[in-house]
Length: 153
Image (cartoon, rainbow, N blue to C red):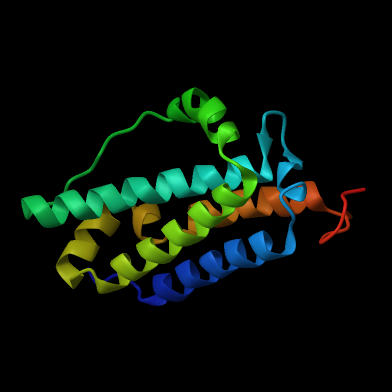
């Protein structure tokens, strides 16, 4: 099975979406709530965490010469919440951008057979835009009707 190469553009677009969001919001605005327990900064740190999981899988796969799939229970989101909240908003945004950029490039350079294995294991590990855009959509919804690049209303 050949992985549809459109994942490259989807991932790049979601990374650019993170970059645009981080550029237009101040640190204060990055504290805007997204749901009950999250802020925009927490959402961005969350994206960086899960992108780093895929980076770990790529690193260990390259090291071991076979697909490595680190299993992490989704309760880690709740466990990590206070840690993610402690990251300064601007740092969370930079971490999300830099990690997404790095992962996009690594996925693009991955040899076809390994990319196919990774995709068959979990397509969301290859099409990172699926996960990123879910949370960016939540952020956009939370910001709906809110002025940007200035104080939040």
